Amino acid sequence: MRIATWNVNGLRARLDFIKLWLDARAPDVVGMQEVKVAEEEFPFDEFRELGYEVAIHSQKGWNGVGILSKHPVRVVGKGLPGQDEMGARLITAELEDLSFTTVYVPNGKALDHDDFPGKLAWLDSMASHWPSIAAPDQQAILCGDFNVVPEPIDSWRGEKADGRIFHTTEERRRMAALTQTGLVDLFRDRYPEEQRFSWWDYRGGAFHRGQGLRIDFVLGTPAVAARVREVTIDRDFRKKQDGLTASDHAPVIVDLD
Image 1 (tube, rainbow, N blue to C red):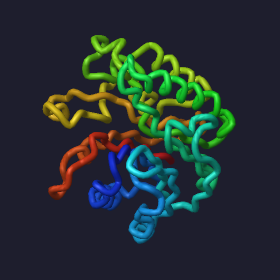
Image 2: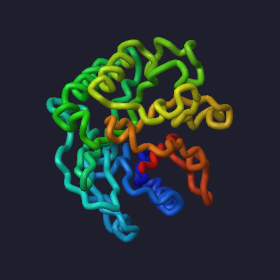
Image 3: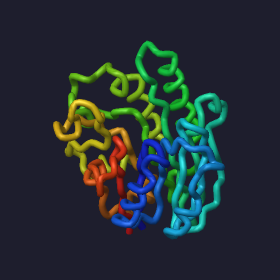
Image 4: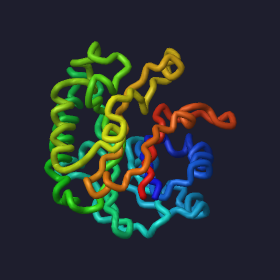
C-alpha cells in the first residue's frame, strides 16, 4: 500500500498538477491539506474518473482537508472537539482495516499573534483527542501539515532557528506529546540522521538554495511502523511540471508491505 500526505496549497489552482502526480506515483491513499474549496465546488467526479473515492472536510477559500482513496472510505470524524473556530482542519476515515486521519495544524503566524496560543491549544486538543481515534495496537495513521519543526535537524537554519515560529519549545513539546500517545514519525524512524525538507518558501530561491523545513509528517502506530518499506519526500513534485506551478510543499510518500 502506498500512502501519501500533501499540502496542495489550493486544489483548484493545482488540480492538473495533482492529476500528473497521481498518474506518476499511483498512491492508494492521499491525505490533502489546504484544499481551499467549499464542498459544493469540489471536483469529485474528476477524482472518481481516476479511480479515487473522496472524503472532505472543507470551507470556502481557506484551510480544508481531504482524503483520496482507492479503497472504500467510511468517514468517522470531522474536526476536533471545541476547535470549530479554527476552521476545517481534520478528517478521519476507516479504509478497510486502516484508520486514516489527515490534519492541517494552524500556522500560528507569529509568536505575538493571537493565532499562536490558538495553535498551541489546537495541538493540545489533538493530543487529547487522538486516543479516542485509535489505540497504539491498531493500524492507524495521522498525517498532514503540522507547521512544527520537531528538531533542529528538520530546519535549514538548524539550532539558529530555535525560538522562532515553528521552532519553539512550546510547539515542540506539544508535538512530542502527540507522538507519546503511541505514534511514530515514520520518516525520522527510518532515517534518524538525514536532513530532508518538505516545505520551501516560494521567495528568494529557497528551494534551489536548500532553505527548507520538514513540517509534513506521516505518523503511524507501531503496527503501521512495522510495515514500512520506504519513506520518500517527493522533491521532484516541488518543481514545475509541464509548465504547471507546484505547491510550496512536497508530497511525503510511505510504502507499506
